[in-house]
Image (cartoon, rainbow, N blue to C red; front, top):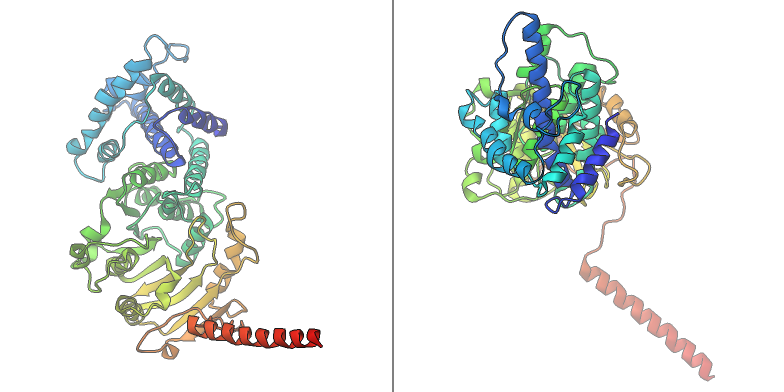
Length: 492
């Protein structure tokens, strides 16, 4: 129903000089969607209050509500063109009036947990990239066609928004860092198996894919077909006390908020900030989490003063995030973390120390080895570490994922590819692709945890350059002898 609206919206955005990529399209769609959602939410709450004979206090004042400036209506429900701003007047209102007013909510809000704070945070982080008030008017008219009143509408909008985030990742540049393949996330969640009442955390949440999928798992079950019958208390817990995230980048933060809203969370507990700079070694138990799910950024470098917050000093962001997650898990808490596969075998001091930490203070029970192409646009291979905090590792179960085809943009990872992994992981069953290693077999000095499938014949190791040069010389000498022999025969 709404798919054509999104396509038409893209056509409008492509004409804007300030919008040059899928990232820009998603950003601009996000703030427009947010304001339309807020207007529908307030309208719904005002109606509920009226039915109860109560009054409703609107968050936004009348002049800044969507129904006033973006889509004023006549009595017959059609757009009132005389009252609707357009052209330069519309651009001036958005830039000089609307955005400053909305940004001010951050200072006026009672706490970061309120939707008022989210409004202020969002509109303090992004700007309107519309240069033409006529293009913006077209975009507003299209967004106004979308509705958030029913669960069916929200579900369809959620699917469309997820597709937009996926396209953003496929478009390259830095878009891929916002998108982890949803089949992989769903498999990770099924293994961790969260329950209502547990606090779920992603300190590098990007577009909030892990939190959104965890919400769907708790709300609709593993198959996602029908909503569970939850009590009012359960629903309140899901709304307010279950999903927590932190995100450093402004665009990702805005996308995360919108994505969670579309998945049914009215005021997401997402904080804008640098997790690693804010890391606290003396975290209290009340601030710990039951579950950590994440695909932290890797390859980045953190400053020396940030590294001082961590026991194992390293500039590699992924290694710092891994320490953060271990620290912020409660005793008995569970985690599933994506990381580069080289972490399992790197011989540098930080890698060895972190592997030792995992083995001694956590039960690293499962390692999922992902094939190349799992993350489109990323040339690195990854693994997923599944562990519980508070008890040492005794045995590690490995699974080498092999979909039987090359993965790519037109042939991505799907849920069926991971079904065997999820099923076998429940009992740590052996197969051609899975095996177990006792921790006593792990070399104590290096704690090397490399993926070495005992069911597959190892390929011959690559030779060193000196060996290759020597072999080439031998071949050259043999070739020279053969050529000399051929020349002698010809002369005869």
